[in-house]
Image 1 (cartoon, rainbow, N blue to C red):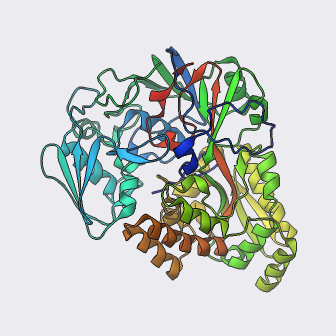
Image 2: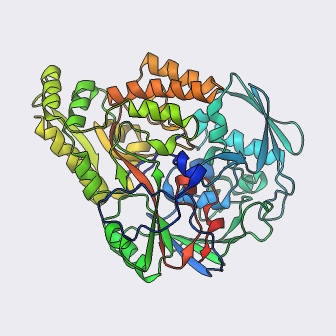
Image 3: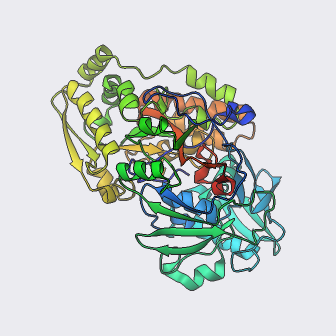
Length: 547
């Protein structure tokens, strides 16, 4: 399930270029690239470290708000939880899915057995048991609970401990999406006794958390970040041993402070959740390394209108034709993005890439065409009508993109009002129905939990989807996506998604803006972690150390 991502920029989508999985280019920093030239030199893993890096400081775009996995739905929380908490299955740096805290046995199309790995234990030394797994999954699946993932489990009939080490999931019908979700936040396991004792404080600064991951919580102080240390008794010897003594993950909200910290080494590194105005400068700085993974995210305009001009597909199409995407990619993303054909680009093609590529290439690149735009507006007959776009002038990227859409809409004769909220309140557009209903659209960068375009599309194009803010549905899209969910053959499943994608794109359910690359920035002397979006779901810091 893709979650509402209130990043300084919104929400994002998942994966890595399959070509990179089979033969990644040499992991070199993009130091010689100009500020606005797109790269095709995608990296999966940077060069393995050879030395201990000591104590590190890692920047997040804001402070972490919760360490409860089922309430994690943004970059800071995901980046930290992926280090502290094991999911039942694990996403590798190339976004492939394999065993994690458990191994999976497909007993039948509607029966999945998860067997906990031998020796798996929480940080306090207690073994991970099937009771912990059942508790964690039922907590995530509870539609009346506090989590964001209940719809992930809507084909799960029962979650049962069949032994102290094995849990069975019984499904009402086959569900090819569930395996991907259980390799991400919905599949993370917490200690039942600890969580129950903490009660409502679980996952907070007061209640903390208890997981089984390769790092354990050292300290958490509001405004001072979260400090983690390697878990010396971590159960999984197949992962590299961390090559640093301590890492503090802290929110850095100011571009200038982030840039200066990366240049001096006061900040060891960061994964960019949002466009960074100084990316071109950092690319050419000898003290900084910039790596790029394949386009994984979708930068888009969420359409939340249920009535008025933006409820008309022709108006959405017209604004798309009037939008200067190349200008946005050049000035906002500084070349670290590509011109989209659809919401989901090549980073999300984790299986059947040939099918997905053919479907994507069959759609035209979203180039401007003012003649078509004006003709559509004439057909719609809405000239002079008004729309509202949600924005946050306190966040440069959101503000810039809102202004670009405002200019495109006004070019077509619409009146545009910007509804400005604080950066901290921007999340409300995603989690408060009253907030999303108060505007017709708002910018986002959005992601799915695993490498398949359906991971995002199901959230915005199916009835009841977590991001179907406008209530948009289409019978053909519903049939195609539901068929994909049940289809075991990867090629047929991909074709179903491609069929849905064609309609979603034509209707501009959301308006694609750009397909940003995953961007990893580190101070010189550090190496090892993935440059793909796997850092949101896998234990990325186990690979990090000194070069």
